[in-house]
Amino acid sequence: MSPFLTIRGVSRSFAPTSGGAPTLALQATDLTVAENDFITILGPSGCGKSTLLRIVAGLDHPSSGEVQLAGKRIEGPGADRGMVFQSYTLFPWLTVRDNVCFGLNERGLPRAEQLELAQGFIRKVGLTGFEHHFPKQLSGGMQQRTALARALANGPRMLLMDEPFGALDHQTRELMQELLLGIWEGDEATARKTVMFVTHDIDEAVFMGSRVVVMSARPGRIKLDREVPIPHPRHYSVKTTPAFTELKAELMEQVRTEVLAAQAAMV
Amino acid sequence: MKPLQPVAHGTRVVLGVTFFILFTALWAGVTFGGIVSKTFLADPVQMLRSGWVLLTEMGFAKDIGMTVWRVLGGFALATLAALPLGVAMGAYKPVEAFFEPFVSFARYLPASAFIPLLILWAGIGEAQKLSVIFIGSFFQLVLMIAVVVGNTRRDLVEAAYTLGASDAGIVRRVLIPGAAPEIFEILRMVLGWAWTYVIVAELIGASSGIGHMITDSQALLATDQIIFGIIVIGVIGLVSDLGFKWANRRMFPWALLGR
View 1 (cartoon, chains in turn red, blue):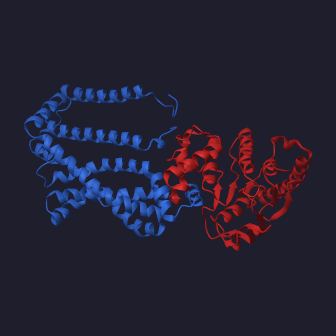
View 2 (view 1 turned 120 degrees about the vertical axis):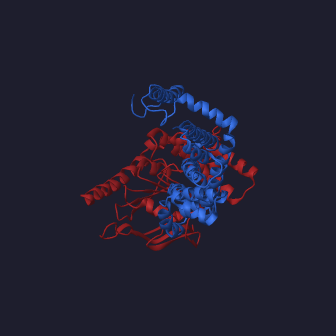
View 3 (view 1 turned 60 degrees about the vertical axis):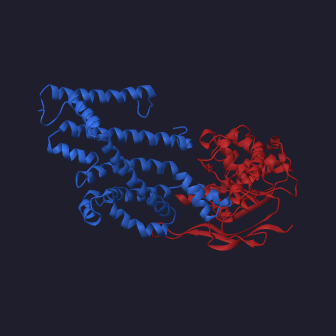
């Protein structure tokens, strides 16, 4: 399968804050993502996984290397790479419906078409009836569902997710994982969105991804790249199957080593 | 009382009104009780009586109208000029770097000190009065609007970019709508300051207006009229404040939710 997204030699270092050495957040990294694939990027805090995602999103520039999407070099952000952030980034002055319509509005779609598309995605994320609510009136889970609908409604080629469920409680997080997975699995295999999902939660990484990439502690580099040997569609009960537990155990060891390394580096 | 614990609307109104009552009672006590001479401070009843005379026999309503039109006119001009500049400064750092030092400096120039200059340049007509208010309001507005716009949440801007917004789209659809309720609050505050400038402008070289009436009354030691004039300004200011707050709630309901 021809790679859809190619990350080649991408590194990121940040200028020193007050007369010191520059911080290398990300070592020269190579990664390829096939189209319609769902890959999760797992790693401890500060390992550079969000930095990598932001570079793919075009919100940050690599210090070296380049990223290409379908053969074209990524220079900046765009509607082809939709993103869901960990902080709630719904526009507070817009209702749920107008938030979801934001990208469509920017494109100049006729209003009736916008509303129809938006309604469809609002229904998909289970928020029918809340179209006219403002973000402040929604719970965290509902806000992230709206953010997801907003990103999907814009029809991006790739969906980038930066620990989107990190701020939610455990139960809500699990339901959101199933919701997202359900929407992704709902499409035909050749029509599924290419997703890059960053998380520090191992269960989440294995449950959602078809492929898990583990990053080391700062300066981050890719340590491990595993196929998740569990077929789609996945029921939440796969979380207790042997295949799941086996992969989880391996990842736990790898991640734990990195977390300890990160802590040791801080001392 | 517990810190930050909200108070019921009815209680809030009663408390606010009570202060006014106590204040008036103190004033009445001090004047009727003879503690302060009538020459220096008229009593409340006398003030109301002369206020009535001002309104019915001396065309004070026209003076009030003149003052209001001058404030609103000068303020509207300042707002029209300050809004685009403030937004541009908040949105584009080079623009901010160019204008901010001068605007920060000009902000401290007392508008009142400009009056003699303006009389020289523009005479004693309406243009001069409007200029005073303009100078007093414009620089404050520009700076405060620029700060509010510049404080827009970065993650909202990033989200908009990932939804395909253009640079112009970011300014038009994220920076401005996000800052709108706070900008409106800024307008309310600066209008309040504009009131102080208009009175000063009218104290010198005016033939109408509340400030002019105050100067006239000063010559006659009519403290009752002066106080009435000042109170009228206070009432108008309060009404405009309430008007702004009401309009802000109507236009930007999202800004107050959950507060």
